[in-house]
Amino acid sequence: MGTLKDIVHDVDLCVVGGGMAGLCAAIAAARSGIKVALMHDRPVLGGNASSEIRMWICGAGSRVRNLQETGIMEEIALENMWRNPQRNYTIWDTILYEKVRFEKNITLLLNCSCCRAETEGNHIRSVTGFQLTTYTWHTVRAAYFADCSGDGILAPLTGADHRIGRESRAETGEEFALEKADSHTMGMSLLLQCRETDHKVDYVPPAWAYDFPDDEAMHNKPHTMLQDLNTNFYWIELGGMKDSIHDTEEIRDELLKIAFGAWDHMKNHGDHGADNWELEWVGFLPGKRESVRFLGDYVLNQSDVENARAFDDEVAYGGWQIDNHLPGGFELTGQEGAHLQKRRLTDAYGIPFRSLYSRNIDNLMFAGRNISATHIGFSTVRVMGTCGIMGQAVGTAAAVGIRYGLLPREIGRQKIREVQERLMEDDCFLPHVRRTAPELSRAAELSSRFGPCESLRNGVDRRFHGEDNGWYGCSGDSIVYTFPEETYVRSFRLIADSDLDREHVEGNPNLMTIPMPLFKARTYHGTSFGFPECLLKSFRVEILGSDGEWTCVREVQDNIMRLIRGDINARARAVRLIPLTTHGSEKLLRFYGGANIQIHLFAFEVR
Image 1 (tube, rainbow, N blue to C red):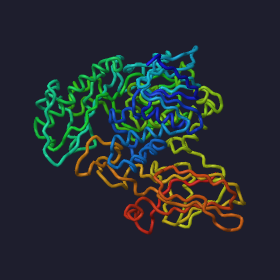
Image 2 (image 1 turned 90 degrees about the vertical axis):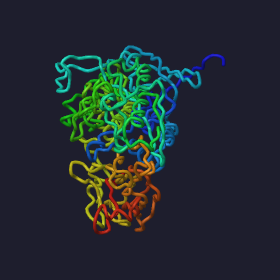
Image 3 (image 1 turned 180 degrees about the vertical axis):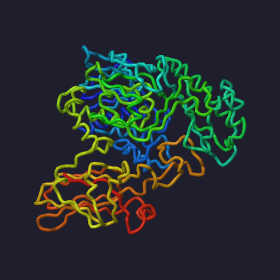
Image 4 (image 1 turned 90 degrees about the horizontal axis):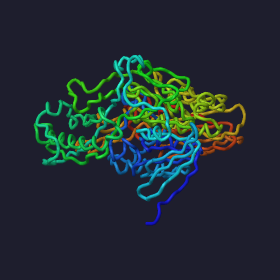
């Protein structure tokens, strides 16, 4: 084999960790035109959402209506719904892989574990990872580094300030904080995937699995998931009382004993409706909830999330419940949820950019389950839908920083409005910030034959706080921008209704908000849900020339995206959008009621 190989990469942004946060950070930065290296220590992307762990993606929209995460997260969700109706994990892995691998500005380094960092004072110069498949050392030199590794590998490698464990009430003032701080965390879980067959399936557990002859032996953990498919084996959880990084292998071994024992209990001890179900997959890589939390210029806390706090530097949001898994995990009783500490949130809270960069390493950012938050604040931001939009925020901020030559703290102080505008332009929702419509759209007359359409340029691209913020119309209707004089029009931007609450789709109602389910029931043919019937499928964009004739500049037949952008690059007296069909136009009358309303859009703008 000879000597080990060394390769050096020079990029603008190095992202360490390819879970949903790192994946979205890399894509956002690359699409903004900067060069990115994504270093990930696994063969597949997605982190806890990948085929190796199989936790479904949750977020604010899973708990609060109209708060589904958009941007890159919704783009991926829609593509998966379209291409992967059977919810096959191989196809899911492929979709995540190709989103990164074929983005022209990204160098993807899979199976590459970050091992070293070169620093100069409080500045990172490079990181080096070992790629096991090629026996190659990859050194990445970059202007910025984003730790999206979950376990925060750049904390020990660079000396970045961080925290492990739970704070005291005296320190944070939080209701749910402890009287005395400790080093305990939430645990990690192994999940099972099961499939319903049309015949009885026997199960013989391995000899080393734990035996749970009754519910009490299994600590009364809830295990009705074969009937209620919107839950899972999250309670096969340990590690909160140990070191959630260095003890992972030992914890994994214990989790396997519990996992196989739990399935044995469901199959062979009592009637759990499991006779025709077979065990299809068991995770051998634990899904982690908590380990290292970096410390930024701001530490998000319980009061912030419960009071739906707005921040001037808001770049993401959350809305998942306070969901604190107590460190004892499986050893605690599941009766009345005693192993959990929960409180439902009713509105979105902002996540400030100051919680996404290091307070003492000047070119280090982070996103995912390692951001700057207290243990209690972290218990809601840690879910993957929220992690993904934090990642997109970090990638977008890096692109703004490269443009102006600013460090993260300077970006937050000098260019945060530009970061916010870019995020919202890319269909990321910021609950406490309103997007500014392009100047050309604001200056033009906007009209529709069907009815009022002013909301298409109001800067809010979804239903929110009781306002629809959309336009209803018919197939073949038109929305027209008319200019005072012939004007050069560069492009258009359109936001279609992708049914963020998944109301207008067919399938199992218990699985509507779950992209990839763990249980495949014959009743629903293994499909969690179909495709949003209200999403715009075909449309035309036309321009009115000086000769008084309309000319088609864009025609789309098979759209599956919520955010649609296209070039025009022509002089025009007017621009009009003609929506034609949705993915279920003939069915939508029953949803919208009356008349011939078939189309629902949230934005149409020109620039």
